[in-house]
Image (cartoon, rainbow, N blue to C red; front, top):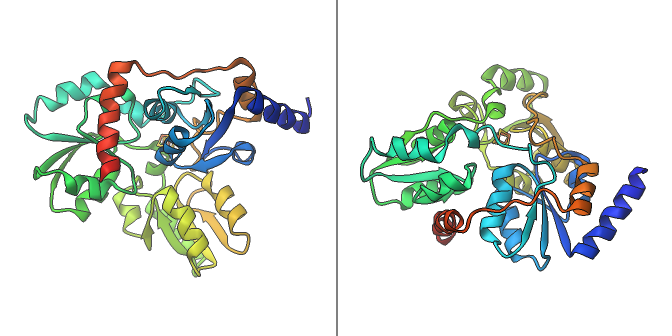
Length: 301
Ligand code: SF4
């Protein structure tokens, strides 16, 4: 099958199945190009819930498809590659969280959206990288447990007076971006601004002009008067930033900051997922309801 034939077949199956394709900002260019919507994990899940389509082909990693299924339980959510997981989300299990909480009786738990449904179900409130500070400030207690990302927790701790007790998790991609990478890029592009994702190490955050979630990077890229920006996050987002802003230059802080899980889905797998309706992601009702509670509390804020 040629690429053109694959694309035609995907369009045909989308109509037959009443499906839409959602792609995360870190997906391969060919997947972003075929998607109806591109965005961050929560934005895509909310799009899934609001869409008229009955089938959601979610091109991202497992916890994202789960979140879409939690918010749209009446729809069929499909992840084209069942092995596309998030190593950071897998750094804490629900039973580990339950045990950890016993050390801090009465403390509220804030979870990053990058967690499994089972972990969300054990938390009080969920957050994203763009609303994490607001969510933490909304909790009455002065001491808060935060899972799973210690880097995001460190960023929040700088922005709030609350004491954050963090799980020792991290995103291996953001964690491998080092201050020397930023300095080397700045030497190459001295006029460029540096934008860092809050999952980066605190030492990298210190060198950033702006700290932004991927959603805010996309928005800021179209609004900034800067012509050159060094981007400290997963490098897959560069494709979208360049495509939407052809008159500006975006440089990855590190060329190899590529998440192999995010690259497991390709055009062929999108086609196969629509042909065979695989892999369906379903969250057990009781877990889904509790996890949804944590997400809905965040949305209210
Ligand atoms: S980039 Fe990091 S947070 Fe995102 S899916 Fe990969 S490991 Fe998980």
